Image (cartoon, rainbow, N blue to C red; front, side, top):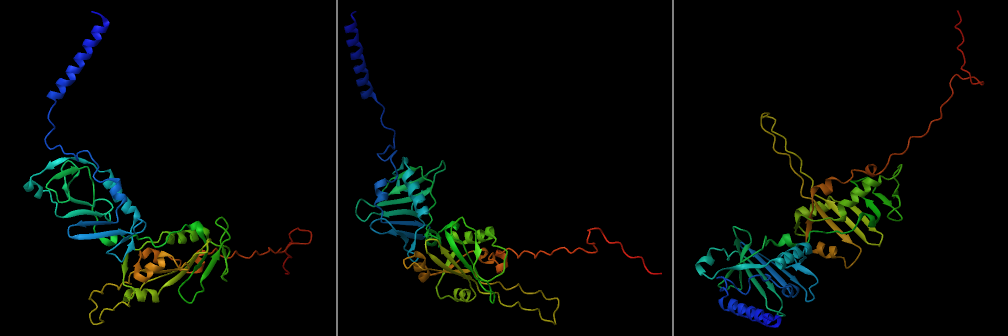
Length: 369
């Protein structure tokens, strides 16, 4: 048989084989759905988001942004700025999740997947369709059951998600943000009547020098850096009403720090708390009575003001009072000497005792009998 005829025969067999496979190809597996293998949410939907509402077990929080998608705020928490790192983490989790398979269209079975407790709703402002997702329980093999727009279909997605619906947890807790190398001048206040300590440097590599009148043998640079670092990333733990009794008492008993940066920014920081009331003494007629627990001081508050009129911290301080960790307050230096080296001891010239002009030791005169 000629090579040309053989090639034609092989080609015909290949075509017939392909036709036979197409006719006898297996049916799609049951439950296959167009969403299978697709992303849980598109990048376009996330980019167009103007508000995100998270609900879980009766709690809900709404995060909203301006039309340009710039500044996100927590609507239910005094319009505080959103912790953007947490928002980015949520967006990454949703964007990277994919639909594994269609689980069921059976309403009875769907009721057992717990679609009534957790949900994510993303409003796009009408630019593109909104995103509504009910999040069910976790599958035994991993992933979460999900349902789109109250559809009568449930899917399994490779989604590992903790829905935090507590508004305060979404607020950015950072109050100050600068580096220790940015600080040019520091004024540290102490309990009265001690004079505040003022130290400064010409640039980030220069040595600190005391400008106030305390006698010293130099500034303890490492201790100053440690003190500054406690405020470079200052965060609140909780908030309170501006005029609350605890906050007012804390301000009345506050110590002040003034932090000046090389760019001219100045932060005035007042930090304090209500002192503990005097302890109650046991009645003298009952010496066996247990002493009551020692009274405790109030929580620590911080009050910050910036000389920059448009600084975010000034706006926040109008809205709420801010509690911070006790350690930030209790670790403050007790006095100026904690940040200063002691004065060097004066040098004392040694006196020659009992030495002759020639440098030889003088002999003691014999005692007179």
